[in-house]
Image 1 (cartoon, each protein chain N blue to C red):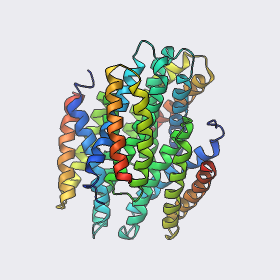
Image 2: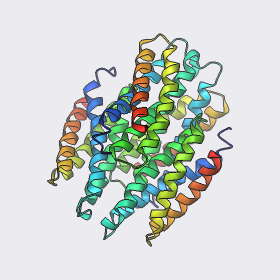
Image 3: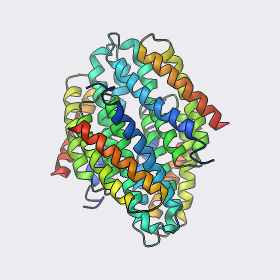
Image 4: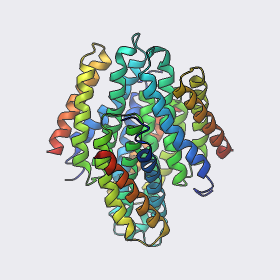
Length: 109
Length: 109
Length: 109
Length: 109
C-alpha cells in the first residue's frame, strides 16, 4: 500500500492530532478543570498516537496497519469522553476522533 | 494571538512535516542513497521541528513565535538542499519547505 | 561538537522530558486541578522541547545549540511554576527542569 | 501498574530511542549508505515508537501495555537488521534494541 492509498487516513490522523492538542489546551482554560481531567489525559495520548500514525503511514512503514488499529482504539476512547462535554472544543474533538477512528479501522482491516 | 490567527502557518508546518518524512523515505529508496544523505538528515530535523511548531501554535504556547523563527531556518536549509535534486519528492519537499519558511517568518515577525 | 560532548545535556533533557510528563499526569490527578492548569500547560511544552533537544543533540544536528537555548528558557519557566507547588511531583519536576536549564545554557553558550 | 513498576522498561525504551537516532545519523555518514538504507528506515520507526512507549508508560496510560507489545516487534526487527552490520553504532544499536524488546515483551505479558 502506498502513501497515496493512505492519504485520507493520513489527513484524518494529522487533523485529529492537532484538534486533540487544541482541546487539551482549551480544557485547561475551563472554569471546572477537574471535570476535564480525563478528557485532557486522553487528548494527550490520542494526539501523540495520531501524530505518529500519520508519520508511519507517510513513511509507508510496515508497522502502519497495526499502529492504526491501536490508534483507532484511543480515538474511540477519546471521542467518547469528549462527546460527554458540551463545549465546542470537546464536540469538535469528538467529531475528529470518531472520524479518525473510522479511517484507522478501515486502514487496519 | 489565537490558534486561528496561526491557522495558515499551522497548516504549512503540518504539511511540511509530512512531506519531509515522505522525502526522507523516498531518498532511502533511491539508487544513489549517498548523494541523498544530507537531504535525509535535514528532512529528519525539518520534519520534527515543523511537527512541534504546529503543536505549539495549536496550543497557543508563549514559545510559538520564537519556535517558528528557528523552524523557518531549518525549512530554508532543507528546502535549499532538496531544491538541488531533480526527483519529484525532493522538488515537492523544496516547495513545501520554502512555503513553510515564509509562513514561519511571517509569524515570527 | 560530538554527541559524546553533549552527553550530560542529552541525559538531562531526556530525563526532564519524562519527569514533565509524569508531573502533568500527576497534576491531573490532584484534587484541585485548576490550581495546576498552568503547570500542566508548561509541562507539556517543556516535555516536548526537551525530548526534541535530546534527539537533535544525539543526531549532532547543526540546530542543536540554538535549540538548547530555547529549551533552557522553557525549562526555567516550567521549573519556576513547578517550584511554587509543594507536591513531590512538582518539586521533583522543578529540580529536573532547573538542572536541565543549566545544562542547556552551558551547551548553548 | 504504576510508572515505577515500569521503570526498567521506561529506561530501556528511552535509551533505545536515542541509540536508534544515533545509529541512523551514523549510517548516513557511512561510505556505503545504500547498504544501510533498511537500517536507517527501521531506526527511524524504532526511535519514534520507543520514545512514545516511554512517554505512555510514564503517563501510566491505559494503552501502555499494548503499545509495548507493538514496540517490542519493531525493536526485534531493528535489532536483527542492525546486527547484520559490523560497525560499532550498529552493534550498539542491535544490543539496545534487543534489550528493549525483552523489557517491552515482559511489560506486555
